[in-house]
Length: 195
Image 1 (tube, one colour):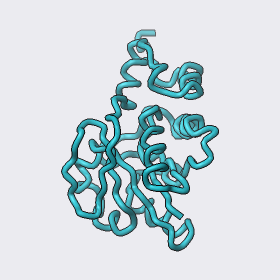
Image 2 (cartoon, one colour):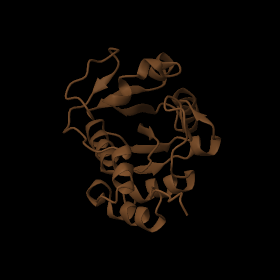
Image 3 (tube, rainbow, N blue to C red):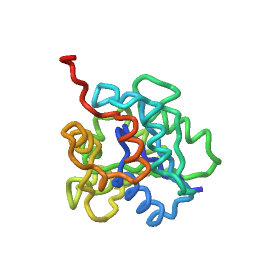
């Protein structure tokens, strides 16, 4: 079984996450892509803005109707700081022996990959697959790593949050179900502290 792992804050999830998962599914002949929302991102040093509940729901809405895309809540259930190496150890034991894991990441995260906890061990557990977010080309840090060419992804969760705070349109950045959830729950609306 070939398994793709797409981790992140998903604060909120967006079309860019879907494009990476869809491209990986096809290009790497994956059987499944696991979306793994983190509890607390190590390098960012803070918890996501949206609750674990809301982010989990939004990832479920993002992947709705896509039978090869599954939310894996291990980091949310474990809580605390999320370390990829620990998550991969868990997933390697959980899934079929002989499965191959591909760890999917944007070039922006890959740039700092050597600062992650035990990057060489992560490479032992998985093949690192890099996708363009900011750059058209990436210098790979290790011969085992792979770069997949595709159109650059010009959307980020932080861009969406900023636009929502400014009451700007975000509908083009997220699937309809995620958009409706964002509007209904008013997750990223700035709270008026004067009242």
